[in-house]
Amino acid sequence: MKKVFVLLVSLFMAPFLQAAPAFKENVNYEVIRQTSTPKPEVMEFFSYFCPHCYQFEPIMAELRKQLPADVTFKRTPVAFLGKEMGPELQRAYAVADLLKVEDKVTPLFFNLIHAERQPPQNRADVRAVFVKAGVDGKDFDGAIDSFAVNGMVAQYDRNTGSMNIRAVPSTVVNGKYLVKTEGIKSTDEYIALVKFLLNKQD
Image 1 (cartoon, rainbow, N blue to C red):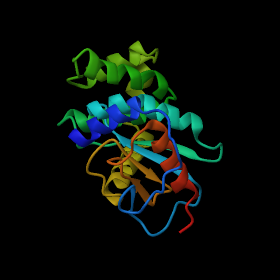
Image 2 (cartoon, one colour):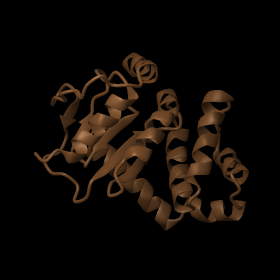
Image 3 (cartoon, one colour):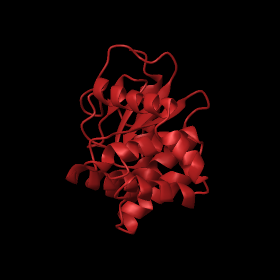
């Protein structure tokens, strides 16, 4: 966790690169699968309960703005943080995605947990966040245990398990490369590394 904090500080303190870095396997990234996804993609693993994910949000927003048009950006919420509310907020993300309100709901959850220090304690609290985001409570009720959301949650768990994700935030590129952030010195370098891995052919 301390390494991630140091990374976050350095990313904000050093926004410019002096030269294109030479990225190396097992230093800047790990190969976690032998085959890549059919189409280029970036997948972020996160949790609303993760303080570093909360701090990482501006960096991920900048990355998304700079990704090529043919690259798909996906988010996978993990269930292993937040105790019994971890799976509940993982499910909440699926509902937000299904109802196409993720951009409204995600900032509210992050702010509630990390700025206001009032994490949701039950499903009623989660529902209240969606209502605050402008979602009809009946739409939330109809989606939260739906077949579609159950399938999305199952896929999140498969992604987390198959890619052996044990900490967040984590970024996987093309389903094959896990970004190692320990040696990254700036936001620009982080984005350059992701782009490098998107174009990597071997």
